[in-house]
Length: 344
Image (cartoon, rainbow, N blue to C red; front, top):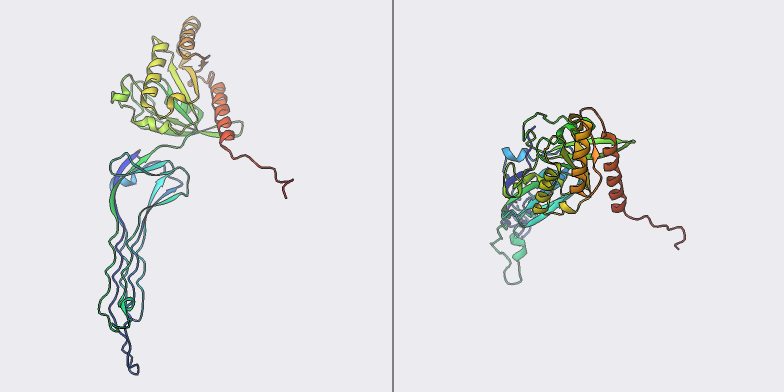
């Protein structure tokens, strides 16, 4: 399945049904009077976050959604039925924007959340509503109100606990494949990863979700390379794992390049807890490893982990460090339990 994280969609809610002009015509009722029913309300357009989706690919093949018109009113005071609604099903983490792609309408962060993005038009009144003491036989009814129509943007930000960032070929996809059941494409050329990948890692019977995004290069915030488009997928993460390849001539420069792009992007990424690791350490001898580790430590201001996803060296300590940050954030976000034993 292809990955699509942004889609432009046209929606239109249903028009209201028209009211009816009708009169009672029973044989033995001399003055029957009006009995035209009201029109039904037009269908609404809803958006709902559902389980089992992680892409907006469905909206590449269908971009127009129209709810049904309400049924017109009928004689004998029969009100028309409401028009059928339309529900746009999206993955959790989807944001809905107005046509300008800047004004946020809603943010669906949990499965089951629903939001009405276009209300159907009200049905028109039948002629029974217009009967007065001076007009016993009104011959007019209201048409239904038109529905709403608009163009919206759907933008997906994946829901993950940890995000993996770094330059191209820093070993991000290899790490994801080593610690989860995900099967990202892995090769030795830059920008092998073109779309974000998700995987579930397990540590001591506890699980957390890892997001691997395409590599960043200098100038990504200005559109260089793939750009910073996919950084939105790590905005919701609780911690960042910053991988710096041991094959870099200057690990310090590589680290600072990615940090500069995170700060230029904004969105609070530069303020997130960060775990730094020197990856692909199996390609270095002891002396080279020691030098590059010291340079990375000076640049990052913390003691980096040393790991190799290929050999498994240092992978478990990195996972435990990520799990500790994720668990701490989960506990901080959890509502405090109130002791009600002594409350009356």
